[in-house]
Image 1 (cartoon, rainbow, N blue to C red):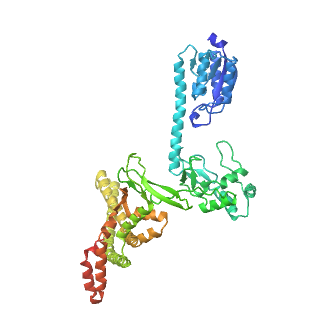
Image 2: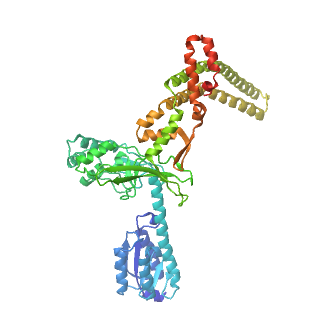
Length: 540
C-alpha cells in the first residue's frame, strides 16, 4: 500500500451515449466512486480526465492527452472504473499495454482489481480483446437488426418531422406513424411549395409563426426548423413513401408508413427547387419478380435490364428473368426474355378464356341456383331459430329450478351436474347464434367468387395485353400457383377453380351453342332437360 501511495495517479472517466455503454454509470458517478477508492487505498490522484466519446475507434482527444502526459512522466498510474473505459480498440489497448510493459505505467487500478507490470500481461490483453470483440459483435448485430428493419419497410433511426416512432413498443420493434401535431404543418409546407408562388426561404420564415418545432430528444427541448432544415425536408424522399438504406447504397425501399405526398408532387418540387436532374430515384419495376422459382434448383427468379446501343445510335432495352442461383451456384437454368415470358403467359390465359355468351349464361345460371338455395336456406333458418328459442328457454328453466332449489334448501341437481348441463346448453346456443349470423353469407361469398372467376376468364387475357406491370403481375399471380421456369418454359399449376371449370372450355362452348340453336324448337321444359343433360356445362 505504501508503494502505491507514492505513485501519482490520473483518474480517467468515460461515458458514451451509444448502446454499448447504456449500462455504465455516468461520469459523475464514476468519479465519485473512484475518489472513494483513492481515499480507501490512499492513492495520490493529481488530475481527473473526463470524456464523453465512444472508445470503439482510436482518436479520442482527452485519452490521447492523458497518454502524452503518461509518456512525459507526469503520473505513473491510472485509476478507472473498468479496463474497457480505457480502450475498446486494439490501437488504444496496445498503447496502454506497452506503457505498462515499459514501466511508464506502474499500476492501473480499477474498481476491484489492480494491474501491475510484473503481472501476466496476457490476462490484460485478453480483457482488452474481449472489450474490442464486444464492440465488433455489437456493430454486426446492430447493423443486421437495422437491415432487417429496413427490409420490412421501416426506416431505421429517428422518424422525420411530421412522423413519430410508435409508442409502447420495445426498441427494435417500433414502427413509424403520423404525428398528429406536426403532420398537418409539414403538409402545409409542401402545399405552399407546390403552388409555385413561394420560395423555400419564404416558407421557412412563414413557418416560424406556426409553432412547428422538432421532436424533443430526451431532456433536450425541440427547436424550430432551420433554413437548411426546410431544404432537407423538401428533398426527403421519405415523404412520398420511399427511403434509401444504407444511405448512398442505391438500395431504395418502399416504406410501410403512410406517405405525405405523391411521387409526382415530390418530383415537381425538385424541379421548383432547381434540382431538375434529381427527381425521385429511378426504381426498376419488374412485373413478375418474387412470383416464380427455378424449376431446377428451387431458387427464386430475379430480373435484370440489359441495354444495347447500336452504332447508328439506336438504343434497345431488354429484360431477362433468370435464376438467382442462391441454392445452387452451378445451376444451368437459362434466362428468359420478358417478351417470351409474356407470350407464354398469354398462351396459358388463352386456354381458359371463355366467350361473352358463355360468361353471361354461367352467371345467369348461378343466379337461378341462388334462388333455389335461398328457399332452402330460409327453411333451415327458421328451423335453427326455433331450436335457438328452445335452447334459450331450457337455459332459463334450468336456472330457475336450480336457484329455487338452492333457496329452499333442497337440491334439484348437484352443482357439478348443473354446470355440465348449463355448459352444454350454452355451447349449443353459441353455435346456433353463430350459424344464424352467418346464414346466407357462404352462398353470397360463393356467388361473388364465381362471378369474379367467370369475369376473370372472360377478360384476363385482354387485361394482361393492355395493362401495366402491376396489372400483369396480379393476373399472373391469380392464374396459378407453384409458378416455375424450367428449360426456358413457364410452368403454371392452374388453380383448382380454373381446372374444374375450364378444363373442357371448348366442349362447353359447343354445348352452349347447341342449346342456343335449339331454343326456337324447344319449350321451357325441353330446354331445361337439355341443359341438365350436359355435364360439362354444369360441372362448375
